[in-house]
Image (cartoon, rainbow, N blue to C red; front, side):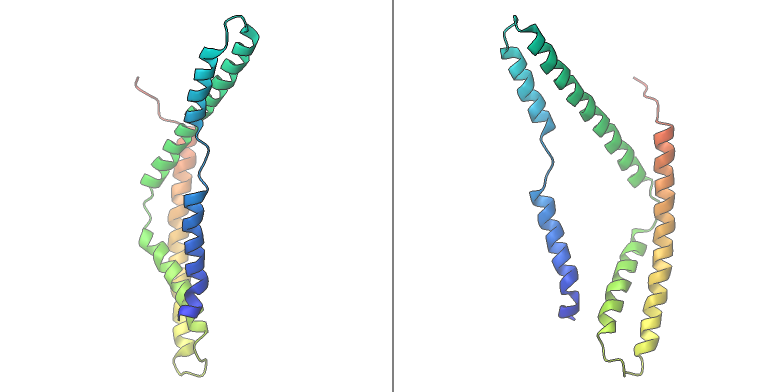
Length: 151
């Protein structure tokens, strides 16, 4: 069983390491450093100051846009009405079917158990896909009609 689960566990470990080592750029820190640099540029270099200010403003606008996208994604995740257990059941059924494939095929219950696992995986996939589609539709609707701020 461990030999069959080794690729899954290896992928999980790789995912954890990738999440820890590949983090995004520190945009806020670079904007802060550039604002400090802007203060140090002499006032007689107006062209250079204007270009740096424009660059800073563009990065601030991008930062604001990414925060808005993050809120929209978070809202879509919160409104997800699907059952996360169906997704877990799907993954578990697929992994167990993969492991079950390695069992001796001459066993009397091998085929019946394999068919049950396939049916279970298909039903769980349909449930998970339907809920995911509903969440994506809600996300698209929220992007078309963003909520109006009261401020």
